[in-house]
Image 1 (cartoon, rainbow, N blue to C red):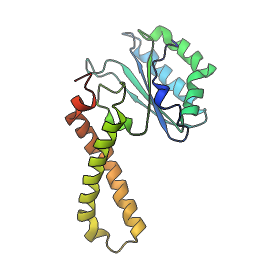
Image 2 (tube, helix red, strand yellow):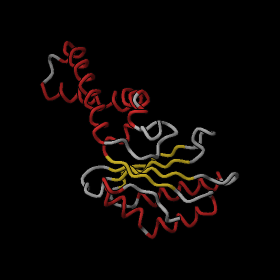
Image 3 (cartoon, rainbow, N blue to C red):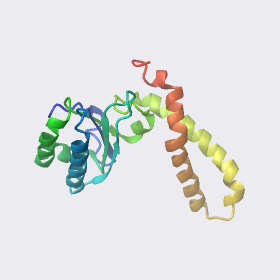
Image 4 (tube, one colour):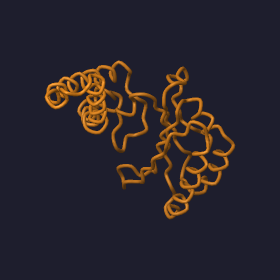
Length: 196
C-alpha cells in the first residue's frame, strides 16, 4: 500500500506553489458503500493538515475510467509530502486495503500540468515543459487579444488595473474550462507522442 507511483523529480525544487495529487483506487465490486464511507473519513483527517487546499472525487465511469479518482490540493509540495508520509494517512490506507483491488497510484502535478489532462487520462506523466509553454503562450495570446478588442468598449470607464484584472480573470476561466481541454484534445498526439 506504500507503493506510491510519484514523479517528484521535477517538483522537489518548488515549495512556493500549489500542488495537486491525483490518487486512483480500483475498488472491489460490492465494496463501494464502505469505500465511500472511507473517502469521507480520510477527507476529514486530511483537512486537519497544514496546507490542505481542497479535495475533489471522481467516481468510476464504466470502462472509460473504472477507478475512483481523488484530486487533492495542498499549498506546497512540502505540506503534501507531510500528509502522504503521515502515520494518520498510513492508518487510513490500512483500512482501505481490503476494499481495493490493487495498490493506489499517486501522481503529483504542479503548475500548468493540470491544464493538459483529459477525462479518463488524469494520471499520467505531464507533457514536456516546452510543449506546455508553447501551447499556453499561443492560447493566452489569442484569448487576451480577442478579449481586449471585445471588452474595450465595455471597460473603457474603469481604472486600468481593474480592466486588467477583469481580462485576466476571464482569460484564466476560458483557458481552464474551455480552451485548454480542447487544445489538449486537438494536440494530444504532439503532447503525448508515446501514447499517440
